[in-house]
Image 1 (cartoon, one colour):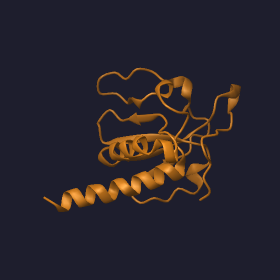
Image 2: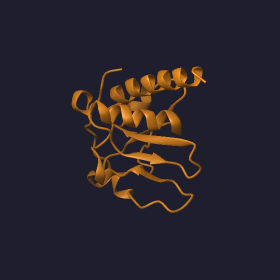
Image 3: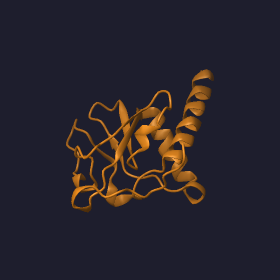
Image 4: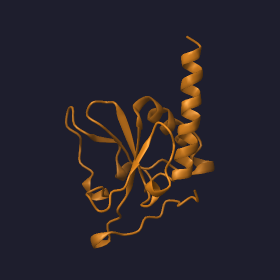
Length: 133
């Protein structure tokens, strides 16, 4: 898959439609750390959502990412203008879905190639840690 960078195509009223990559929380938190440590080489982490149950994290990625996303253990969903927009940054309430990294605190979106590499590294680190027990 060719990297789409951090550019997003504007949707209605100039607001970008975005795709959402969801992963298990443990792997997602590791990936956030990996991306942040290598931000100078690979690009910044973008906004990240957490679900109310604490089971998954969602990384906002450029539209069209879902068309070629095939990383096992994760899913990528197209927004198709269904409300996945930067302007929806609201403070989470207890037990509700909210922002781990809100749009106003981080870069535009996470580059899908950077995310793919970080998720792969995170999976290897988790497997190694679990095998040491």
